[in-house]
Image 1 (cartoon, one colour):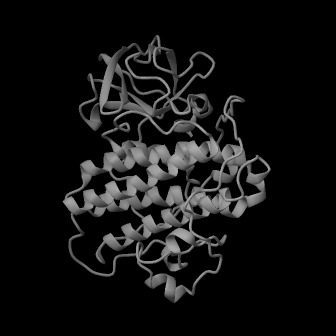
Image 2 (cartoon, helix red, strand yellow; image 1 turned 45 degrees about the vertical axis):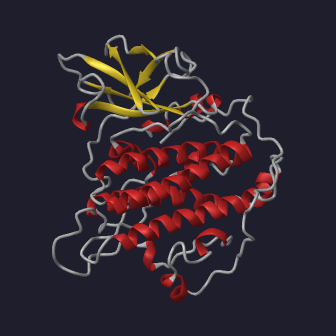
Length: 366
């Protein structure tokens, strides 16, 4: 499994100020019985614990079978999908806690609070997983974490990890806002919005504290309506066959669409630039239909006619540069009105900072 990571020299890792308002970290892990009883939001455990071991019991790091019979909760599948996504994000931060140290970041000229910030975000992510565990009823399987490929991708390089942090968090924001379409209850929609706000702060940490770039993007983050397609792309971070056998298929339903990359040598990956798509794991089965490259930015999407033989389109110039995220897919209908109309993707084009865009030219095709 290979992934191209190119850290542009124009992306600086300069001196940053201490993280403002970060609680004093606590490296002492509580006993398993106490951890099991802690409620996210009612304890500092999921915000200020700074030890390398995760703030969760061994039992909660496994798939938990259903303990009651009967029909699962109406939101059962959505919550299981969310848990699978949160396990990926948590594992990314947990990898940094175990493989890296505070000195790895201070050597880059970063503040000695950088590692504490990573610990706090790790704590937040495990808190998210606990929230979804609690939301799943006793008659639902609670998915457990798998094994992940972050060591092979990051290779213990703190610069690579910091660049990846922006990609991971902007992916989290996108799938959480899209997942609202699957929520049955207003309370669940509120929970998703609340957690997406936390992910937004994590992304802001990377942009401001580390990359020293603007946080201002526009009136709205990018909305992608098919959250499961984003989650499916995150399967590339999972070691094949490593998920607990009790865990359900993730995500469900899973389309298993061909993932998309792009040729970084023939594009700036910015609005107005031509872009050549890549399908490293196999092209879609293009039939005798009309196809469209659909680009999403903010609340809107723009469809561009796509010829599979030419395999090159222009990123819509209408989208502002240096702002947020562009997501693209290929569909057999303009504007991809349904998940079933999408035949490949999605592809993420980071526009903020745009220097990182080509670093992740294959990130969606792991």
